[in-house]
Image (cartoon, rainbow, N blue to C red; front, top):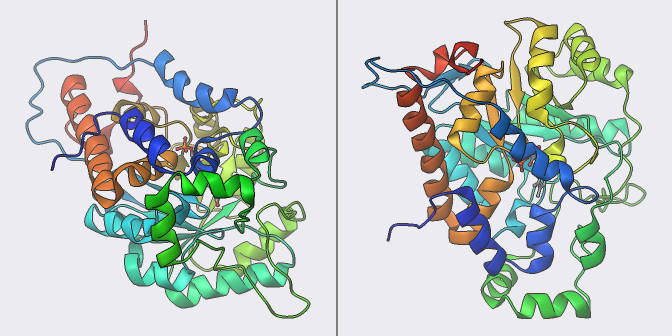
Length: 374
Ligand SMILES: Cc1cc2nc3c(=O)[nH]c(=O)nc-3n(C[C@H](O)[C@H](O)[C@H](O)COP(=O)(O)O)c2cc1C
């Protein structure tokens, strides 16, 4: 059966019907009145590509080498906590897509699969994303587990010193680990497919950070993460021998300093609008950071990518690689593995179709020359 996902909005609309409301809202929601989440998407409309004619574009190539690995696509899967909330088995689906399409999959500290299981499923396509909460010792335990498992890219997320109030989560009483009271029970009862499967497979949990050792306590999603600073970054840099990516960077000054501290790449992101509602769209900040860190320093970006043309625009404005979050969760919530595969292919096809229009044969060669300017 052909999966009817022709835009990311198609996947979102079906996921909204199939996934319990509280969980769809957790995925879809953002900080405050959610204006930045919309701005992240609409900001792309102001950026135009330059159509070109009579270029032989028959053999277009989407592959890209980034952080010492050859990928088949210029985009990957952003780290998301508790992906299995979108649909039971989502983590396996993401790993399978990452391997089959040869794209990166970032596992969150708050993931619903362990560091070790994810590496076993996705191998060198897996990256590990670190949140630091509680003791530095427990953070380095996670880092050491990632190192022992074989990961070669560590993403250190720095834009959650405090989990921002998200209105939908507050209204719905969303908590991680999940708490199911009478209000939530009705929501789950109205979505029996999700609920029965989750009961059979086990309710998603924060498997990497739940520690029942007496005195250690649990890492709760809303526990403080504000204790980390530049000194910690220095120690992390000394400790981690492979690629160190810093995620959630929206300041030119921070980016320059992180480069000086030995980061291997900077990941421009406003967390999909989930943290500071009054922040700018990440695509707006990208060219400023590119200008400040120089032409050759590796840059990733996410937040608001919903089609292939947006990905091309980011590559033209200085990104080396693009990550997407919610679109893949919507796709899984809508149609499971087939939905995810269709969505990855859709984005790839959209990039390829747009490359033909702008006279570009290789993703590797996209530059600001493809942007329209009057
Ligand atoms: C449900 C959900 C959970 C997320 N959890 C994490 C996380 O655990 N760690 C992290 O660094 N970013 C997390 N993010 C942010 C994503 O990595 C990414 O920055 C964001 O989704 C990009 O915006 P987009 O959803 O518009 O593509 C999460 C985002 C969503 C939607």
